Image (cartoon, rainbow, N blue to C red; front, side, top):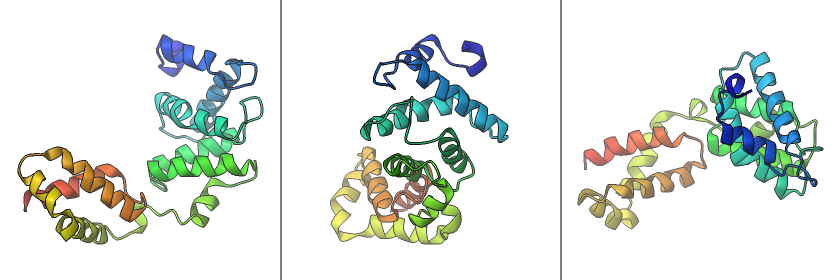
Amino acid sequence: MKHQYNLDNSQIGLLLTSKGSKKGNGGEVLYFYEKICSYVNNKKSKISHKEIYLWLTNELIGHIRSVNSWFHNPPITIEQFGDVLIMIEEKKVTNVQAKKLLYLICQKNDKTVDPQILARDSGFKTADSINVKSLQLICNNCVNDPNNINQLRKYQSGNYGLLKYFLGEIMRETKGQFQPKEIELLLIDILKKK
């Protein structure tokens, strides 16, 4: 199993000991993980087993617990979770949107919800569906906003950590429709010219 999924002993241990059920039977979490890996592989996805592990342990377990559900009867199907991961890979949703999508699916607790339809109905759009020129305009407006003059001056004085401030402002403005890395690259370019 260690070699099959390219996980280390501590990661396998976490899958085995995660309290995904009322009885703390980690075997249910491991079973879910194995089924997800199989599902995305059958869909010819290039998502790594490590990425699946990270999404399962960092996001999904928390969402399942938040609705007082457990892995013996999760509020999300293997197919729904796998489809969300594939949507990330295909850039149909951003990571931020995928987190919201997983949350919504778990809240609905409806095994018939199609993640793609839910994403569309929730108004999720990605950079592919929004003009990149408009992102440049949003970035320029953020940097030139009079309310941000102090942050701009501090950035220009060498406090480069403020890049995260501008990034956060733009993520909020665009409602997570762009990957942070794309915004960061644009911001660096704009701030260099200031």
